[in-house]
Image 1: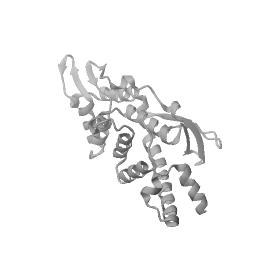
Image 2: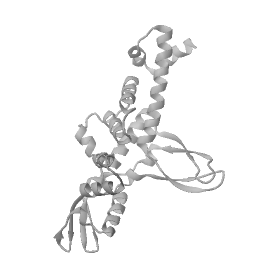
Image 3: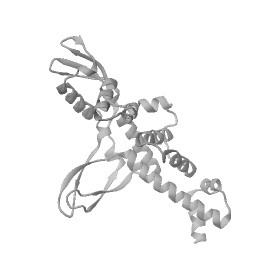
Image 4: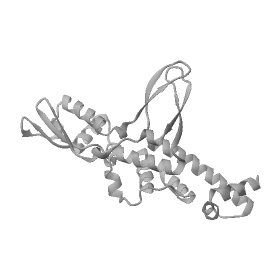
Length: 242
């Protein structure tokens, strides 16, 4: 896991700007883990993906995260601070197939991965997405010892599966407990490291391009020349330009 140079940041931002949120997360992950093949990236569990993205975020911006949320009761902006270590959950067990029994039905399944999210992003609706996920993540199912397909799962078994998927990969569904200092309201909010990191990458890339614009106008340097400089030297030139 490593950070990104200024030039790599601009290239990553350019590639990800027009992508779907799911594809953008994979683009970020591929940049963070060049040792992975595209197939390996696609098959990573959601929790492991998010843990790698937390590592990338720490390497680029440091371990401290400052975030805001809007109180659902009074609409006040709530500021809160986090650290990447506080958001990291052990995902070692998430790669192993699991099994449960519900009403005489035994279901063997695996947790969701990136390719599953990509598959349901093309679904026609909720019912179609549910059918696709069941077909992909149910490895085997049997009722009273006889094999059945994923479409034969009872509603109780589907509900149990949904709960097992959430419990089995807690890194994939991080919830933060917030309290509004203005009205005292407490609520849970989901934290998506992919979206959070992209917001920071977007702001950083635009700031770097503004610095390129300023120095190119002042000195006639190319974008490559400016981005190749270390940040300390680049900022010193910016101070001299005024």
